[in-house]
Image (cartoon, rainbow over all chains, first blue to last red; front, side, top):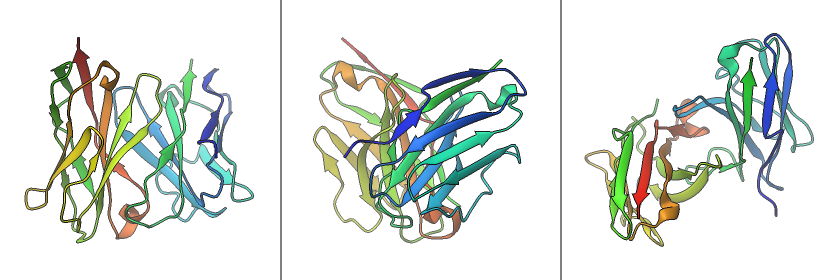
Length: 116
Length: 117
């Protein structure tokens, strides 16, 4: 079916505002991942979901970041009281299963977040 | 824990020539997987090729091949017959079997490849 879909593609927000980033994974993929990519940097792992459960939240940078997944499908990453250092591209990915060594991640186009 | 090192921030290659992008890794896992992704200026991460640690032969996918040297812990990407559309960032990544490395992909910082006409 269709690939991983993320919205919005671009988001400009004022410092202190809350933002919600949405990810719609490939149909049938049980695993969903959020990564952050700052300018000129590699990918920083934030959180993953197996179904609706997030077993490891330790990658979230601060308690201003939260994520949920409902119906084993769509996921939302929420950043409260945004700061300028939150400016980055937020990438969502999905894979068929979690924990299979050879299972690649399929990425969306990302949401470019700019905090002014 | 896994670690990926890509030592070439930027590379240039003439169109139609071959190019090798370097990747070294570190892990204590005996079983692991190595991946290469391409990220064009549009931003999407495109999966290119996969190599398993127990695979005896180097992986190939069209013009992409992975030069896997297990003893040296290197997994270099070779692109043959470069095309202008190959200009992009290239990321090496790995997944292990223990701890956090068993579910996430750990990425290197990437190499920016520019293909010159």
